[in-house]
Image (cartoon, rainbow, N blue to C red; front, side):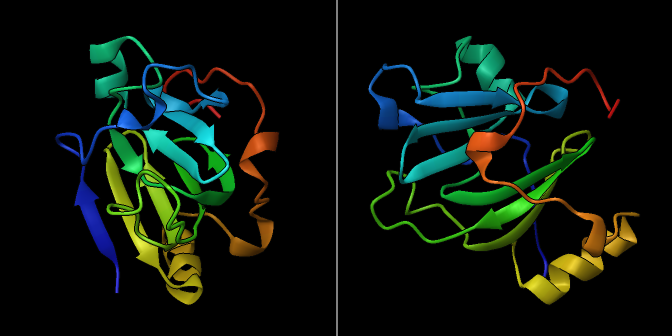
Length: 149
């Protein structure tokens, strides 16, 4: 069953970096940022908290908790897969399964089964067979502006 979360406020804080810079970060549409703090923690930080803290680490809020293993960007959507990562600092808030994040409405569907994820993609006009999931490390270092793909 779909789990929809309206991201009106932060779900949690990224206190896992202790003020250090993340291993890497990638800009996503509408101010979201993919952040990797270590091999167990790859998450999507919300734009409101990034703006509030002027950073992509330390105190940024979480839209999709760790560990993201597959991701694709079809602006304004970010889609992918999260696996359980008990070693992650975010293990208490992660929702394993497939996800769809709508970066314009700040709505995330989390913990979807593959079958429900594919059906949900179809309803938003994305075709599962055409989705090119990739390892988050290989996501391009693109800056997105608004909903422009």
